[in-house]
Image (cartoon, helix red, strand yellow):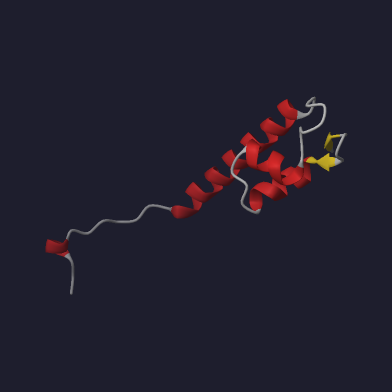
Length: 77
C-alpha cells in the first residue's frame, strides 16, 4: 500500500529499507524521502518502521537459541 503519496513510497519499500540496513525512521526518511513533503504520512511510516524493526529483533532472538555453559573446570578435553 502507498504510505507516502507525495513521493510514491509504499510500505514494502519502507520494510526493504529496514532489511537493507536502515535502523530508524530518520534513516528511512533520509534514504527514501518518506515524510519529507507534507508530512501526513510520518505517523504511519514510523509505525511501519517500529513494527519491522521489532519483528526483525524478535526473529533474530528466536534464532539464537540457548547455549549450555560448561565451566572450564568441568570441560572435557
